Amino acid sequence: MASKRNVEDEILDAARACVESFGVRRTTLTDVARRAGVSRPTVYRRWPDVTALVADLLTRELRRILIAEEMAAGNEDSEESVRSGLVRHATGVARAMLAHPLVGRIIDTEPELLATYTFHRLGSSHKAALELVAPAIADGQDDGSIRDGDPAVLAHLVMVTVQNTVTSHRLFAEVLDIDGLVAELSALLDGYLRPRERKEGP
Image (cartoon, rainbow, N blue to C red; front, side, top):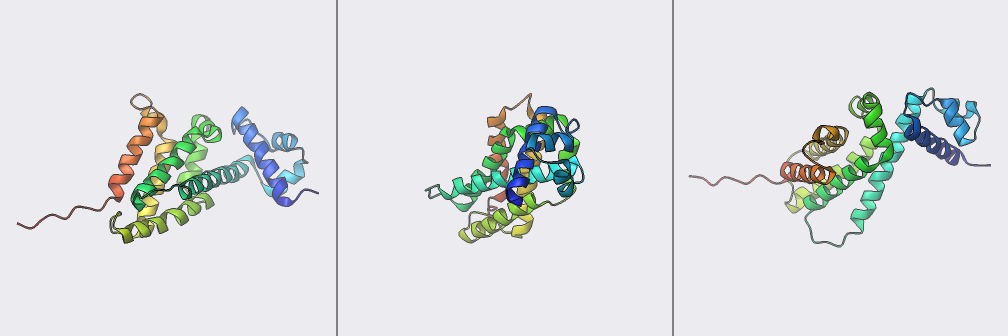
């Protein structure tokens, strides 16, 4: 018998396929159950509606992106500063989200759902991101590459900046392609985190 974790992953995989094909509004829990090859009660016991299911699906996909980027960062053999590494990691997450078909579909067809998920509550994927970013900021403050300030505050601003850039990327379509947008995000984050130069006295 498949484990609970495997069944949930199969259902989430089915939900992703349905949403990417039809959008959230045209996806039903019955559609998801049929595609996953499970009974409707199996789905309904775990999620009361499609919105809750898609929220968990987004959480899973964003956590996968975070893990993949963290592993890629861990494999880098570089003498770069903590700030440079953090900016590279954050923009890598942004680029992966911009290329993700599920995220793209929701941004294009149901942006209000993404707005509810990303702006109105601090979900588990947000917390996972903050658990990575805040300690990195503290390390950067120790090596002098990141400015002073509460690491938790700086981490929240980094996370929200990446998130808002991804969810608002259509607003830049007339002036920037994806590579250009990611480059501008990199400059923005680097400038925000860079230590302030001390002014010399008179």
